[in-house]
Image 1: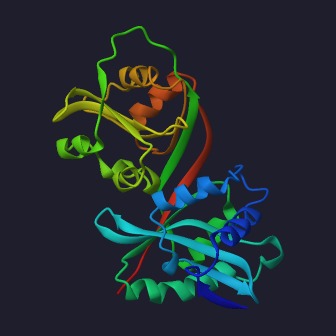
Image 2: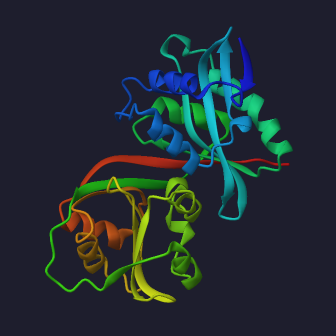
Length: 271
């Protein structure tokens, strides 16, 4: 078997292996190839720094890396790791990282980042063996927002107005919910409360009802969620930092479910 980057591997072949490796996983993954093309663009995937294990010409395992700044460090974010069932137990993920790390360092990448479902103990042990450490707990919530009759003073705005106002808090958000992710998508709408140059609150949401970001200067999340209910009824908030206790309490008050939780794990690279 051999390892090489995925820059010359057909996208359809990667997705076939990707989905097969995740059969029977904790959550059901979409099978639409158009979804994955968009998903990996938003994740800032660099196929020359994503790697596969090949048995002959067959892709049997992979690490797909997005590359961008994260909290001030150039980061390789693992947006997907998988090994076909019949090839497990051969330390393929270890071998892929052994191959990848020197190449990432050559590109001045300072850390590796990933997320793993809390119940996936086998994967957590593998990542810890490689050198990753758990750095925070992320929670996902989903539910229906009630219709509100209160005056909705939120108006559509451009996300750049949020960034210019200083209301965005990068430490609150995981990779796929970051400002960089929103900039990569044409489908995410942002709504602001208050003056466009100094909003008091905002939320960003995609067409599928995924709330990418939301912030409020006075932490009035019940009002913010009420305003959100005028835009979408059924919503999902993925990978909320578990320390956002006021927001989580507001969601629990609305009887939102908490279907899955993840750990964010990090490995610093010494250049």
